[in-house]
Length: 374
Image (cartoon, rainbow, N blue to C red; front, top):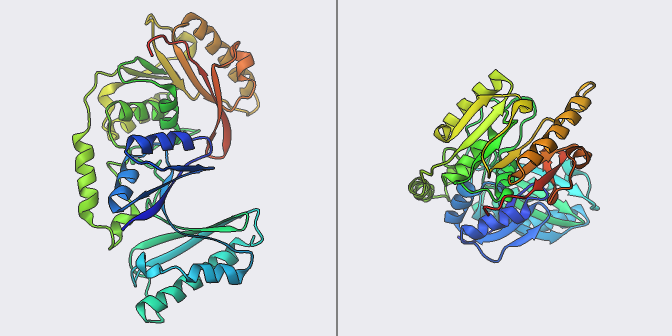
């Protein structure tokens, strides 16, 4: 069956996700805020869930229509043949959001959509009662400026949950954002890469997964695999293909941190992600960091604590980073921080600067691009 599919993203990542989809062979992509739309069948649902590094979820778009009254919302939802997607025993979980719309009460919208889905399924299955003891179907009613979009989530847990991270330290960086940082940096697996504030290792692990061409969703499951409409052979084939396409590159990745417990966690996470052989984790204070290598990449998410007493330490750290950049003048520095005054402290305007969100926190990705080995 052919579906309208949506890869959802955090704001600012859409173009990177679209590039990923293009490299997987998808065309006719439509980019909007926080989403990239494309077309595909069950095989494409499996491919996009297993292979997308920067998307948050893969959704099936079921319907789109205008509604300014509960009656219109009910009618538009009921007109969909939900039995085409949901079996008679499917567990229907409806959630919702409403932005700049006449229908602003999300609980009411969810309740009306659920009633309308049941009404449609009563028609399809010729019954008035549904046990809802089968596979889960998470349906979302999203209303933006009075336009309703109804979707079904195929991913289950967010795609950032790769399955390798047990602990993530104090301020976890989402795996999807870490992968985006690596892809935006233009780093290649034959280049020397350092994260001087590696924490639980997320940036380096994502870089290693990219360098070794390991599909990020290879070792996890997705909710749509429990659906009767999804032939288990499809996911089996995609996983087998992903296993065969893993490379064994000669990579040199180094992570530094000052916290022993965090480094232990990073090593365990890298092991679970099956990339431990590529990453060397060492204890080192950034004030002691230097390198004799002529070319290299730094991709990092340094501490940007705003608690009392932390601010001055963070400012000193950002100044120190600027000094290190002067010494390593042929290196590329890629720094994600929430500190708005970063460029002043660093002592130089970034080559590129973009807004990215880590969860709900607005951050800036400052890129200093001086590496001649492009």
